[in-house]
Every structure is written in structure tokens, then in C-alpha cells.
Length: 179
Image (cartoon, rainbow, N blue to C red; front, top):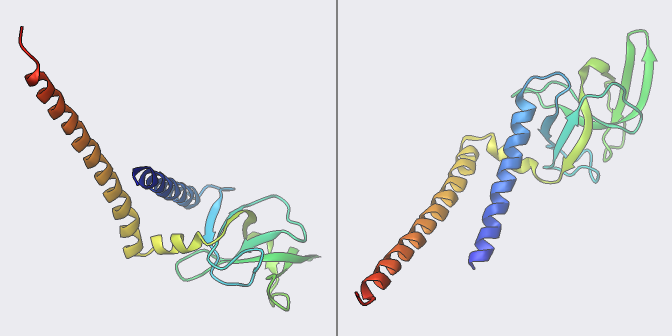
């Protein structure tokens, strides 16, 4: 039982730490930085599942077949993650025709180079649900309170075990004959 608890405990702490690091990295407005975004629709199924997180990074050149994220990133605006279907070179520069893998038709609007957030670097299925939960007050509290309670519980257990050892050592010492 104790071994199973330790495995779950360390696994949970590791997942929380990885999510925290990814979120911190994506928040800093560094040019060429990775961004961690949640996929909220099924337009890229089965390649990218609804509720996944996608880690994107800007690259110098995009090709047909690349999965890119484009659009504004704000509280009101959600960027889109779709595959490049065609590249056009017009008078205003390169534009990209995109399409979700699960969609029947290409997107109505072509994407300009400056609208691209980045190319898919990594996808973690269903982890987007955790990210979206963490962005809400109750989710943030759970992600802080649960690990904190686990750490407190583990430390209290260690203190209790140490106190038992000290008490047992004193008991053994008092029972030994004095010379």
C-alpha cells in the first residue's frame, strides 16, 4: 500500500511540475519561444485529439503537410491548429491554405505568414483538459491544494515515524541495565 502511494505521489508531482514548466515557458514573450496550447475541437482528429495540448514553435519555413497553429492568442480569441494543405505565393507574400484533418473542406480564409504562432512540435493527448482546468480558479486551487496536502501528509508521516524511532530508542536505553 505504501509503495503504491509513493508511486502515485511522485507521478502526480512529476505531472504537475511538467505542466507548470510548460506553462511558464510558454508565458514568456520571447521571440521564437515554445507555446503550449489546448486543442478545444475535434477538427484535427485522429492526429490530434480534442483536449490534447499542442506545443508549437515558430520555424523559418513551413511546408505542405505541416501542422501549424495560427491566429490571435487571448482570453477571447482562440487560435486554430490545422494542417497546411497548399502554399500560395501572391503579391502580398506567402499565404497558406489550411484544413483540419477531420474537416471536409479547406478553411475559408488563407493564413498569412505573420499570423502563424508556430509549427506543431509535440502533442500530449488529453492533457489540455488539465491545462484548461488549471486556468480556472477552482482548478488552480486544486492543483495547488492537492499537491500541498500530499506533501504535508508525507512530511507528517516522516515526522511520526522519526518520533517513534526516538521513543523506541529511549525505551530501549531505559531498559538496559546500568553498570
